[in-house]
Amino acid sequence: MVIKFEKWHGNGNDFVILNTIDNRVKITKNFIKKISNRNKGIGFDQLIIAELPTKDNHDFFVRFFNADGSEANMCINGLRCAASYIWKNNFAPLRQITFMTKKNIIKSNPINLSGVSMYMDKPEEIKDKIVANSLKKILKTPFKIFNIGNNHLCVKMNSIEKYDLDSLYIRLPASVKKMDINLSIYEIQKNKILIRTYENGVGETLSCGSASLCLASQFTEKTKSNVKIASIGGKLNFKRFGNGILITGDTNFIFEGNVNG
Image (tube, rainbow, N blue to C red):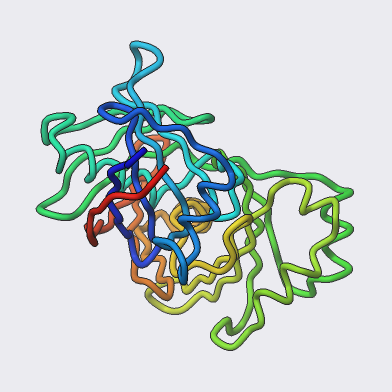
């Protein structure tokens, strides 16, 4: 079976997007691993499936699959790209659309030609003494764990540029890895926060919107001001909005093609 796909990225965080709206798509782990390979396949951080709504409180249901074939609960950069994909292909008018994921209902709005804004509830901080104590044996700097549909461990450092993020992820205790944790290290500068993220099931990515949101939530709550979170792939803008946070950033269409299912 030939399946049509499009490739998108948000700040270098790249995705292959398929849909079950006009395609009959059967997804297996072998298929995901095959096409995620950057040398022998298409290559991506995550595969996104856009589906018709399952209830009347949203417009589209979206699923995310990591490059290793495991399913993720949330991906903010991926949702922003999915919104642009839907508008580009005229599956919905160029106006606000509501997504349902496995854990959240999220509204997206178009900004200019390539930007997308999303309103998100504040992430929940996870306070687990057993996990925290096991992490303190490895981490010598402040850290917090958040849930925003997926789990993020955010570790504050003086400098993140040359830090070996892969080695730190490998050293995480089993109790933390069971949480399907994503690991981020960050550095606070005068006018922005720098971040690097190792995503569970993917590896280090050029950007992670969910991790950036977790940091932005804490920063905006303390300072009452807007903040830019800068990753290797680019910047995302955050500001307080009601009881939640508004995230804004660009999305980019790369190419489209067909792949054998």
